[in-house]
Length: 188
Image (cartoon, rainbow, N blue to C red; front, side, top):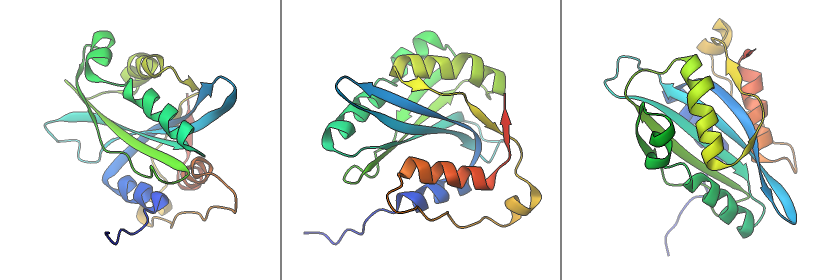
């Protein structure tokens, strides 16, 4: 038997934030007949180093999963985001690389897919071509995309610790609170 420490999903999210530049996020839900919908959030980011040879976007999906049925349902939805299907509708996609999931044994499900692209993506490409294709393939019900403006100087120079989750709050709610407390949004 191994001595595995529990995964602190909120800290994992903060650590990932330090390596990437956040571009936007959107809430989504996955409908389940006869069961409550699954709530989730998708964070869209790119590597901070823009001079990299490889261009990609990271889509980090976080969902509240109260039981095994919810974990199975969200895993099935995320499995729909694969290279051949996405490349058929967005020719600039060269590969979709799915990272191992985190938090499968908890009340939340975290997965990341990196979408490798032929060229550096701009906001219009992401908003008008890539995200509609991703949401259509995954068959999720999204909300509007919240685009992030440059972080204010005080926020950029001193990262704040993650906000504490209130008793009974969800991981998706905690992450939305964290994002809202760290950035100015640019809705559009």
